[in-house]
Every structure is written in structure tokens, then in C-alpha cells.
Length: 256
Length: 273
Image (tube, rainbow over all chains, first blue to last red; front, side, top):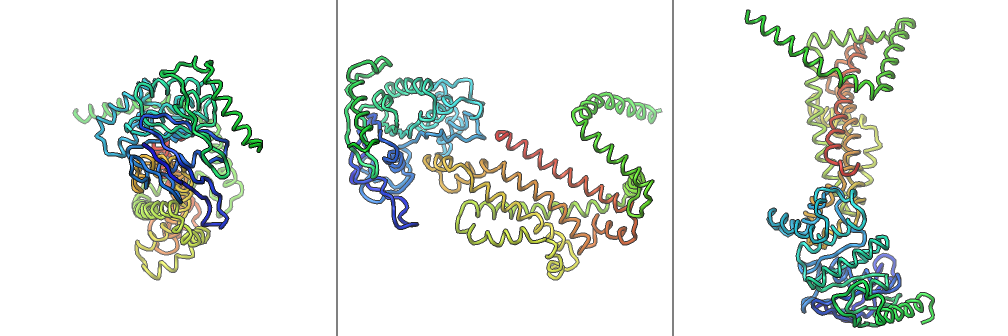
């Protein structure tokens, strides 16, 4: 379980005195095997929050703990999927997928076997020897997903993973992620700016407000699993999406 | 009898090779037609100017080639080339190791960069030859002097390129590595080094060219050995054909070393192309 209590984060305090409060007094938790999506207007600190949970940046106040242990840096129970994929351009698909395993000292045979399985799972069989630049954006992010899954993390942290993709590719990857996750439930924190995506994927949607970033509301998504693309037409889906839009619209236009 | 068969066999094999090589040569000529024509035109122009102007400092191209052939035939070039190349290899290797090391540290650690940047740039823009008398004073008339000259000639451009290369590595790759628990050493070997390789190689290529310059300048000014010393000696005798012949050899060293670096570069950074 991820538990966040009274978390605050300020940027730029050291250099120019007048720091920017990115996150203020954040409280929430994510249960084991739960899929939580995080949505908010730009500047609400959702990516900062994810990076703090990933242990990539320090925080100023509050507590961030996983199963009761405070986060002090990256850990083997977490893996991150990045918005810009962050693939090594000099390494082929196989080498990119085995990266995390290799860093952790996994024997080469085991690395290869695990990576092969995941490459198959994300549908990239036959592309093992390709370089990232020879793949489409959607394929690149599938490599990013396979790399994160390869280290068998308990928690998957996804930072707008499909934000850089075109809509068609994005929807295909959403469906693929749904199937993957429903087959092997991990704890997921998924940052997005797409309302469809937030409702389609999440068990709960965390709605954030900007400047400073705060949690406005945690919204349950009472849609059945496994979810099919048809779920978009259900009343509950449309209702939650509209509720999100009302709120986000108000934040953007300053009418809240 | 036996000798004859050997000779025949040699002729045969060399024939076979000529036949094999011809298409390759023809292809090379076709692909590089402009370059080949430009070189030929240069040689012809040089020859004409040489004969018609009759300047003491501009012998015809054929005379230069004649001098070169004599040098090669008498073994003078081979002896001096060896000594020059030895200095070049040792000096450039040192410049490479120091340059990569210093550049990496400067690229990765802001404090190291802030502390050293002014020195590196000062030494980079300063004509390296001003250090010749100092090295002469320290090392005397030894190999160390000319090696030191080669190092100051070629090191700083490698430092600057390596530092820039490391500094401009996509930060999201470093973050990715950290997220998988990479320690600083792993970030260096698994991310920063491979990612910076294309730009590092650009610096190495420039450094290689400067090392050849440093080699000749050092030999002419302080050590009096190798090709530089030869050029110095014939220059003092106003034997322009011989000086040009040595310049040709230096040119070939420069081009060959550049091609060597280029080849390594192509092999190691194919992904960036």
C-alpha cells in the first residue's frame, strides 16, 4: 500500500528565495492491486507527485511510505513508465527490456528469458533486434512497459505514458494495458490528462487542483472488470467523465 | 625449377588480385569521381605552374613525387616515420585518456566544471606552441618534450567535447536509470558513456588532427627527430621538393588517422546515424 500524508513540495527555494509550492498537504492512499489514475490541469503537480513516489526527487514535508516504509529513493518494488519512453537509442529492443534486470545483477540467461516473455506479452515478437528509432511511438512505449514489467514490480508508476501518442495508438495501448492488468493485477498509479483514459483505466480517479497542487477529490469508478471498450457508452462512465470535465473546466477558467 | 613455379604462382596470384580489384577500383572512381577529378586537376595545375613559373619554392609536382620516391626507397622515411608515429601514438593516447577523464568529470559534476572550465578554455584557445620552450626546459631534448607538446595540442578539444557530450545527455535517460536503482558508476557506464559517444567521437577526431600538428611542430621546434626534423633540415637547405615530399607524408598520416577514427566512430555509433 502506498500511503501519502501531509506531503508538500516546494521548487526553487535554494536559488531564488521565492519558491513555487508544487504540492501542498497531499493525503491519499493506494491499496494493493488497485489502479488509481491521477488527473488535473497542467501545473497541478501530478507528475511531481509521481516522481516523489518513484523516489526520483526528494520532498519537503509529510510522509510517503510503501507498506509502512518511508521512501528515501528508488526501490526494487517500484518501476516507472515514462512519458517520453526514455529508451536507450543505442540499444535494441531486447537490451532495453533487460536493462532493469541487468542493473539488478540477474544472470544473462534469465534476463533474456524474462525479456522474451514480456516482449511476446506486449506484442513485439520479432522486433527484438530493432533499435528504438526503427519503431513507431506506440511500439516504443510497449518496450517501455515491458522494461518496467520485466523487474516484476509490485507497484507500477506511469507518467502520462500514452500522452505522446496519437489517439488511435493510445486507445489500442489502453486496451492492451487493461487486459494486461486485469490478468496480473499490480498496484498502479497512472498520471494522465485524458478524462477518457482516467475513467477507462482507474478503479479510482484522483482529481487534483493546481497552484498549489492539492487533492480535490477521490472518485470511485464503479465499472465492472474486465472492462471492454464498450464501457465508454455506459451511463456511469459518461457521468464520471462529465463530472471530471465540470471540475477541470472550472479550474481552467477560474470559476471554482 | 622450383623457383620458377614460385614466381609463376606469384604472377598468377597477383593477376587474380588485379582482376578482383579492378571492379572495386572502378566503383570507387565512379562514386568519388568529383574528388578524383579535383585531385588530378590539382596535380596537373601544380605541374604546369611548377614548370612555367620556375619558382624556387614551387617545384613541379613530378619533382616532389620523385623526392618522395627517393625517400621511400632509401629508407629515410621509414626510419623517421617510425619515430614520429611512436610519439604520436603515445602522446595521443595520453591526451585521449586525460581528455576523456577530465571531460567526463566536468560534464557530470558542476563544481568540477566551474573550477576547471576557465583553465581548459584558456589552454584551448592559447596557441599550444608557446608551451614548447617550457617543455624543453622541463624535459630537455627528449621524447617527453614532443609527447607533452602533442598532449597539449590535442587534449583540450577532447575535454571540451566530452564535457559537452556528457552534460547534454538526455536527462530522462539518467532518471530512467536511477528509477531502476542504478548507482552513479552504473549511470556512467550504462547511460552517460554510450549516450555521449557520438559527440565524444567528434572531439576525438578533432583531437587526432591536432595531435598530428603537435607531432610535427614539436619535432621541428624542440626534439629534432622524426618527420618534423627532416622537414626542418631540408627547409633550412631550401630544398622545396623534399619539404613538399615530407608534407605529403604528413598529409597521409593525417588522413589515415582521421579515417581510422572515423571507422571506429561508424562502428560504435551506428545507432546515431
